[in-house]
Length: 493
Image 1: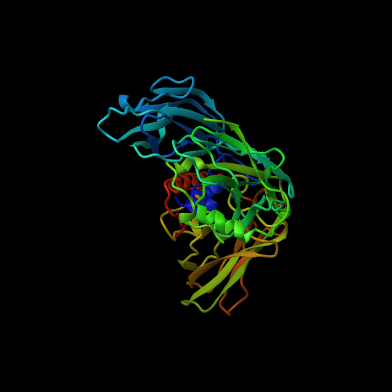
Image 2: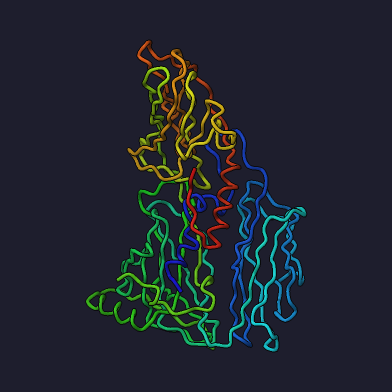
């Protein structure tokens, strides 16, 4: 089992992470909002159960749209009788009916399986679906695998989402249980988050930063027997902290992972930290019954439930987006290139594409030029929701600012055009900085043509455009699902 893979499973790519958990909040000057629901299931696709034992599986239903979902039905389809399936509390054997799921709401459910030991097959499967007003929105095929071999099966308890100001921290109420039939190795706790978050565990002598996981790993001097549950001692809490310069408003992703470690890794860790002093992060039993490498972690029957994902929401931090214009300079008939975009004047970094902010640059090309190539982050259209997929048909382009732009930094986009005429109505570049940008006097800059024959002509000013973000929300949902299925996602033209 790979500890790094567990982190990558839920620390999503920026585009998916920004749109996965709630509806897209629009820039302050937007005129419309998403008013429809998009509901999906966050559910593992593979469950391993020790022969003769039961396994409880927790999953979430999430509405990432901007409108409430009504008449929601979760279906359990084609469940073999031999699975010993027990539906979530309050549900029938085949359906869970939910009258309403609010925009941005996450709701947990749990079911149990106990495959019959008399079954001739070690593998079976069924489908879990979710529909809104009779329209199916998600379908996950779940495979259940019986094993006759003893194994460790650690489960970490859910962690709550938190809201924190810059520089603030929150305690993580970490609990872990061994539902397998073998005793775990020495337990390891890893905590990591997106760049604006940090694991606040520096006071503990049994914790050290690990560059591979992008967080902190702690070796807990304890193991769990089958059926045992433990929690971090109240005297030695684990915390997550928001950096003092974190931009916002934003939802940042973090997670905690608990695994059993090999004796080899524990010995090397102990040697590296032998001279350290300070408190020790400890577990408290609740009931009875160098960079870390993949082979330092014990095999686990169900690694997905070793991970607890949570979000940290931060308040608004201002960032002034200034438009950067340009000039296409050359003779009629030539192909020329210009770079245009936006500069962040601060005082904070911009938020990457997220649930709270949609940053983009609108480009109006001058007349008398024909687009030849555009930047891969630009699409023809006036905004991210008004896109012309027919190609280079018009003068209007929308360019996405996906990543954080630091104070003083720029996000530039490259266009190549062919100059067709000697006279041109000027174009412009318009920066849309989302809720962080409250200074709009510098949002617009000229984009002109200079053929050397005359001065370029600037065009008339136009008003701000509304941006709904529906296309981006759908793209983010797709990326989240693909990431959940452990594919690597890249953004390409």
